[in-house]
Length: 403
Image 1: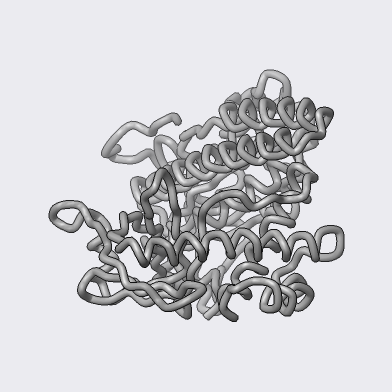
Image 2: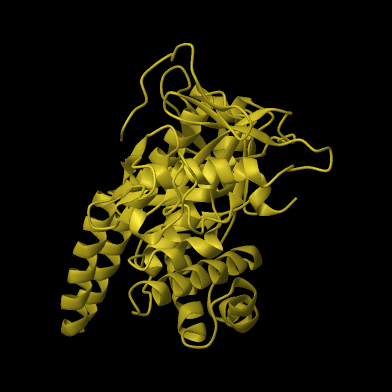
């Protein structure tokens, strides 16, 4: 199976480490940082894919560090990720100072007795996982055979070790939508990162503000050009990444929750190849946000048996959902308002676009060889079908939310 065919979770635990084993783990951390830096130095300005960096730097790591063969491979992969990230963001060559080490199933073994065996530069060490009383949420993954250990990370802070134990499970198969399925439309944007056809708004303002702050810091630190400035820039970038990931997870969960609340078997989003071109105000940062958000929605939706499809978003912000009249002047971009020049229908422009995305999913026809697909668009107070028009809900379980 491809790596993208899995859902992933991380269970953070402490480690109970004997003094001798602690020395070995600290030595591994030192060699890991050195190995990652050697790989970066070798590949910087030359290449950035995992396979390329591994081919270029692996032999040097094996010759000049005490890393085992698999940890040398993982170090080249980590270096490749850091190079690509730096090229996209700061432009400064990465420096590895964080006391962490990556592990995979070749370099670690998780046992049923709540211990983990870890490869070091010397002998393997076996440590007890320090779980909360009652096992904590970590036990859900440790005890469930459907979740298998996956890429993990060892962290060392203030004299203590923590283990970020990764798990993965195959994403559930999502069947083709049943005949008559309802679709939730999602419009992606800059001011509002996502808006659903049921009128749930997910603001992108905080992320934009954080990004602007980071750009100001980067401009100032780039002008300084010192090693300390580069380290501060990386720390600021790491903080931004944490904020972004947290917000994207919140939005993805909210979108899938909305689909469930309105009994939707489909979520329709604008084709990512087209979205950025239709948003002149979008930056490469927003393109990356859209890509990550849709991937988060896809795997969360798959867990709940909901399919995600992409549709052409062209003209969805200019088309009137009431009468179908399409014109650029229907939309007031500055005020984020849509008002049809023909019939006078008005709405928030992003909400109007989300409804049109859902409707386009219905109008484009079957989504499978069996002729099954979306038949109705979920709106805030009812559903719309091409044949029957608008039908109000008998009752709503709860009012739509804004976030």
